[in-house]
Image (cartoon, rainbow, N blue to C red; front, side):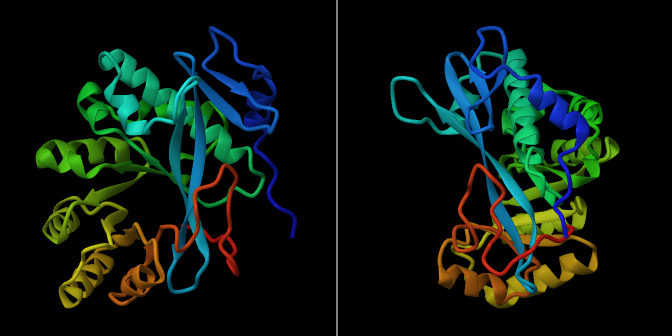
Length: 273
């Protein structure tokens, strides 16, 4: 079966990008046909890590990851880049640039039919006071893309203010997005499952020792329609630990490394998330 074609409006947007950095243009197209962000002289690129159905081994989608390349030094951590944004307006502009970058780089792949998970930086949650996701929804509409295939992922720091976390999740849902939340531990996992009921709940598999309790939490979440994603599954031991509680999905180097193109784990095909 042939891979789906690149959406027409995405193709047109890609063809309209300059083939070299331009001072006033935030995006350009590299010789490798990837989209590159231009931010104060540094390059921003995308990488995508597979998220896999543990029962079937099939791919359900990818986590978008930002890469920040400085012209005269080592690559910097993307989260540090967001922390350096001078004010709310610059932070919002950087976040929109990153989402545009990830969206174009993901859908330039003709086989991109899965779910795209996109992070939201913790500072952005306070910088935008209402209607979270409205601008991103309009951008996707301009590209002819359905936002139902995009998951907006909140960081664990969002739980510093649980009430605000619930409001932000509700805003993204109102704009038609699926939502994911990151739990810092089993207690936060249980609270988010009961109070927020996101589409996806993420938890770092490392350090989770209470296997019996974890299995009960994963089962209870599934009954409420919340899918668990264990992250940081880096070793075979981590993978075995992730499978034990009956978790739905997982991501980590044991299942696939981040890559500029869409990477399918060995023996896996794509399925809807």
